[in-house]
Image (tube, rainbow, N blue to C red):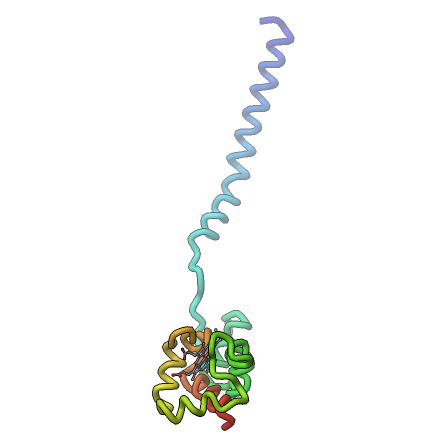
Length: 145
Ligand code: HEC
């Protein structure tokens, strides 16, 4: 081995060792972070009144458990997209279509269908955070009550 080759080899060696060191030293933390990130739960349960919960989650929990949303609010947020224009044959708001169904089937059936879904009517009108009372209130609102 000539002098140059020896130097190159040792430089390469030092470089390789350096790389190995930096990789092993640096890799530890981000790798651990990635693992923590990967295995952490998808959602976290927020108990009402828990000050440590995320602000938005706490507000959502308070909103749904307090039954705070009015029938109008729920209708506008979750039902109007279909019932406003009668999409897919949804009883149209501002007409007597829903009233006719009420006369025919009764409120219990309408509520059950609104909660569980009925043909193209999705369960809870896709408002999964809506309480039964809020769904009932939005039906009442659609009926003009
Ligand atoms: C994706 C569109 C869509 C959304 C959003 C939606 N609905 Fe409907 N809904 C329908 C359709 C379509 C029907 C008619 C189903 C049928 O008769 O086959 C219907 C029917 C109903 C009925 C009558 C059920 C029956 O037995 O005749 C009620 C009550 C109702 N919806 C309430 C709601 C409420 C309350 C919301 C909001 C919380 C909502 N819907 C959101 C599409 C929707």
